[in-house]
Length: 247
Image 1: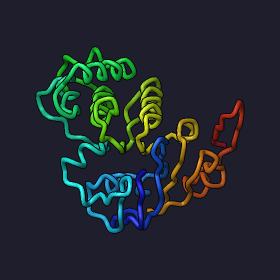
Image 2: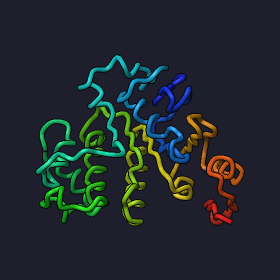
Image 3: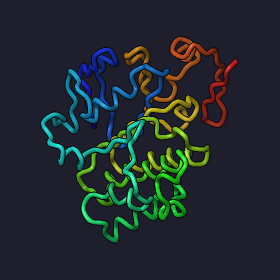
């Protein structure tokens, strides 16, 4: 469980308090500049922040870098890729310890989801933005894969769907649900409201640096969307699914 107590990044987000449960996928929504990236970076211990962040009861700022790397992984929004690496070499950087047989099996499983086989032998500089993003997602997942890292607790992703086509967006969200089901606390920011409603166990909506709504997908109401996103929508419910349609 990730617990935030009056978490504040000056001029960006907060104070925000709340609990993000293990075993669930929490999706952050909100307009550009609402504080999603700052919240994730602060929760990962990557930016200076006030307030407290606890990971399964332990204060995050009491953990050293090696412990943090074992406990949590984060996909940042704008990653700087190491020059000269090939796809498989980037993935290997995400593995805790040696690239064992178990690690190769996990890489193969992720490759099947994200269609990575054709990217392994290519230089990162020769790949499209979406292809690079798929490799970065896989690298981040490998770092905290419960099959490889028994200390893994937290997975944070800032706009993981950016640059991905539809099939890979869906594959990524299914992978995040799978990792949550294995006991990790999984938190990701997302712009597609309908995908958030479909895949999120919990939704946090940020607006102007404040947490304005939290709960299940039912918190994504036409009233909230109008107030936060300034878009008028109608709600369609069918076969247990919720769809918000712009008017």
